[in-house]
Length: 114
Length: 109
Image 1 (spheres, helix red, strand yellow):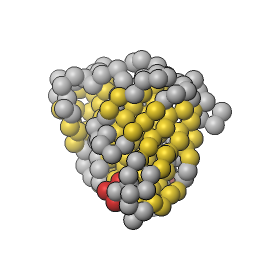
Image 2 (image 1 turned 90 degrees about the vertical axis):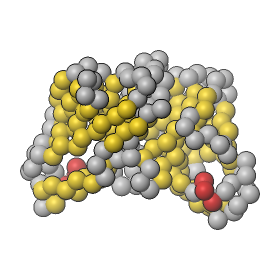
Image 3 (image 1 turned 180 degrees about the vertical axis):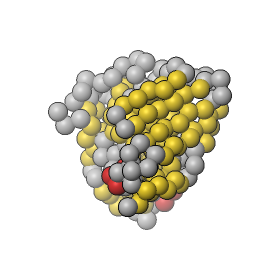
Image 4 (image 1 turned 30 degrees about the horizontal axis):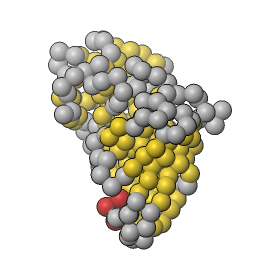
């Protein structure tokens, strides 16, 4: 099992450009999450999904959109990138209702917006 | 909302014992999790406490006091490889976690 994978690993964007980050998991987990991590700020939840076809906002959703068309994939989109979105983005998954305390993380995507 | 407080940095020497504290304020509480993150890596799950008391997993133990809104992670027989950031996180519902800002542990020879 590959666990949680993220594509790409690194990306540099110019202000105003758009991009999509892809997260895939092969553990048949129901719940998937997108976090951003900035120095000294810990992990902050952007959006999450409790099942195929569902999404919900987290703590810092502005400037991002997500989709969960297939159970194993969770996409994070930036429609018009801003320098404030320079961060490390982590995707995570958890098995089912009541197991959100144990999340499995991907290796991260390091995004720089110039 | 939720807020969590943990020290920003802790230092210790190999073989020692170190305790990382976490206090939280949350509108609802189901449990406290701990995660480890090595520099540049993915966070990995260490432990979870839903009830008061101590949970032991090898060299690591985690404690929770729900009445005090307080928990800690105890690392024994420290090794150089334990140098990492440690995050506490609260479950205030069934779906999500709220993470603290992390404690950087530096283990020296």
